[in-house]
Image 1 (cartoon, rainbow, N blue to C red):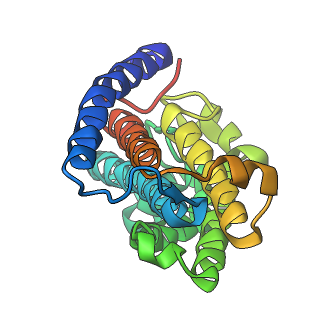
Image 2: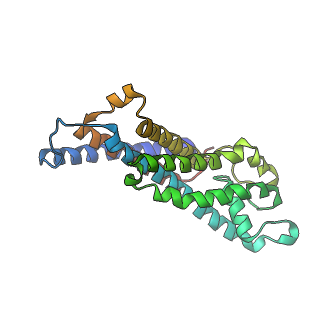
Image 3: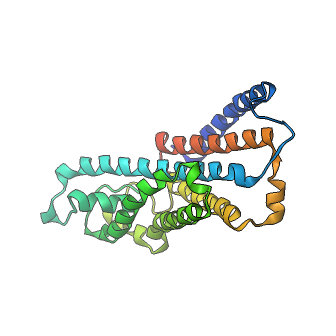
Length: 246
């Protein structure tokens, strides 16, 4: 599926989510469930929810790619043979994970350099999933630790292309170009956005931006819900509708 089609599907889903979110928040406000409607809420109150959503979205895309590569590796196993130079078993699986959204028609020694990246990628995945809990981002220590994990995940995601490891596609029979696929791009966007949110939560800067992000309780609910919905929709589309941008 083409990249622009994927983005259009996600955009349609986000627009469709806007109305029920606004209606739901309005309903809660009219029944007094949100407290004083004129009360202002700081970014430190709802920022951890956005951080958790961004981490959860990146984790979902990450786990989706791991599951996909597990299936691809299993399908290649019957034809793989160590005698012909093909990588097999766990080694083939880890190298495949290290390739991100690039899919190989065969897994041989030409992509063995992806093995450490695959190991790191598999190790970061469960931590990323755990960081989808908002309470872990509310304390400075937790936010800093989460930022560290995010940096590792970001480096793991771009390392194959940054160091030219994706160039092995020509000899390994890749079914996707060496550039970043949609799932890879989305992960990078989510992780960079997450680092921005964490920077504001931990450093309390830029103050001018944070001052503008101090909004009424209803606006905070709508904005946070839309942010969570956007991450969920774009991540779901990345997993379900395809991973490659043409």
